[in-house]
Length: 285
Image (cartoon, rainbow, N blue to C red; front, side, top):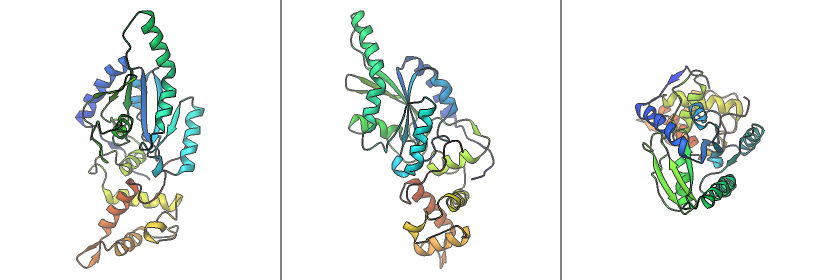
């Protein structure tokens, strides 16, 4: 997955970053959501700096689209780093228990202070942060039990901060996704583009398809078996495979199988989890 360095930092992200600096001071807990298929690439070091010493929970989202063995390795990695972490597909709701556990010390301390000073009971303020399209809005909607914020499988859906009250104990702050200013090695940018965390025009889809095919050939040689009946791509040629996919799915331009349409299909089915459960990176690799 080699690619030249990529610079991508839209103006609204710079504005959002400045706003986050102020909000961090008033929240009690930060929930950082990352994509389970690439937990390292989808962690923004800028957000890491913003968090400071605040209580924090890392949530690996979309676990149902990631390699379960690799996800377990990532959870072990974060545990070794002393960072509380869980994984979820954000629709089952099992992350709610972990969130409750993470906030117990905060709730107790806050309630003791309120009782001591005869203060009105206040909810725990939770900031939800992460780069675009990792599942922040889905996380909030799952907690709320109904649609509170807009959800979309593309970068840049959330453009403004939103405070959302959830019962008596929690107030959640949804924030726009903020990416680092650049990715000097390029490989991280490729992973994020494959996950849909960057606008499609930043990196050409055909180039991404070649990168994904190369990764599959090296790490998941049977990745195309279930969907396309292509059993092993260890020795396969990328162009020939894309034309084969086009024929199988009847993707034509005129009378010829469409190489380009096959590339778009491969990326979409990976991004949506239809292709299967695959991870794009492993701990310490």
